[in-house]
Length: 499
Image 1: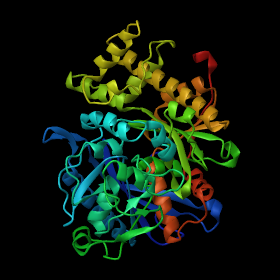
Image 2 (image 1 turned 90 degrees about the horizontal axis):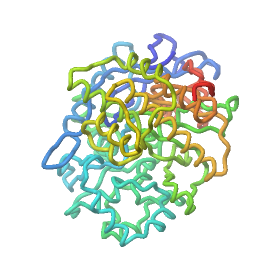
Image 3 (image 1 turned 45 degrees about the vertical axis):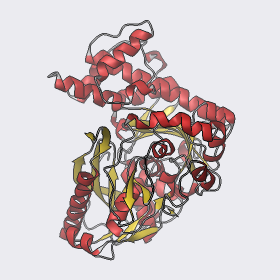
Image 4 (image 1 turned 180 degrees about the vertical axis):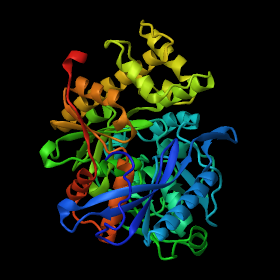
């Protein structure tokens, strides 16, 4: 099985179903997750059923790139209503709700609980001008030594420094904002808090001295909550609107979508145990290792690696790289020009091209904002002294080659900096369906690549909820065993002749 797992009726070994609200930068879903199978642990599996899909994207509002959060939340409510209806039709009841989204962005909520404006998107340029003033107050080496956070110009710390007035408001990261509107409870989930640049990577608490130095209130963010803890129950008006009981719990999960995705990486003792690298491949590529302790060395800072919290107090030691945003933006531009090739055909044509073509740096900030991506890629190639034809297959192959090469560099750097040896690379998320990218990654890294599951983020979300409800048990190893039992995974081995 791969992708969405069909529901198997009448085979549930534990009561209840779990609603996962999973929102990315370009789309969102509400998914029902069920624990199914026999009583033996080796027979248990987790099944997913997508009950609602909706688009997401940045829009220009009030002179900036923002998220249409009001529309986004309306879709969340539609999805929860659909979840209630589907569950009830099968004689089930939604036990809890978990929310994960992208990181760093936030909404400002006043004392009355009102959102003061639609939240800015990290793709807006406003935070660029705040980087230097922040670094004048907080030396980058000191920042990294405490937070362990990769420098990105859109990190929350720089976004907040660009705000004009923060009096009387609290900042709620996007999943926490959704949870607040559902429950009335203000909390900040720890895996997402660790992406702000204001979180102590060792202590696992807010770096309050940084807030003070930047002139920010210590209570600017609500108190921290850990994955598996209960945020609250549904407000009466929300309960009535979506058709779920008022005592339905909203449970904190790895609310940074990558934290949930990594929790569902199907790593087992048979394929390297702890010695695995992961690539959460989607709009962005999150490439790294799972560690027990952060790596806060100067060499790590210079390599621009990040130390973010994972489920169960793990450290996601990774680099945030460019991802399939490059290809999706190319497809958008080609569609505007009247060319709409099927993705499979496009990748097949790209795979047929000879190796050794031009490459770009997929991490270049030049590619962050939406625009004519094919021409920007060709311009970047021209700056290297090479020429890339104005041909979709050639441009697609350039993207795939560039991403695979970037993955290999990042994994080698992570091994060196963390003093670890990687035996296998797990690719999860949408990119796990991209056979060309997975094969190229195996070829360039020289390591076995295990692809899948596609829905790793939703699986991680559901599994944390299921464990909180007693429908699953154990640590990450036991949760990951359920993922392995629930999916047929694809394996790619290096084909050096392709290089």
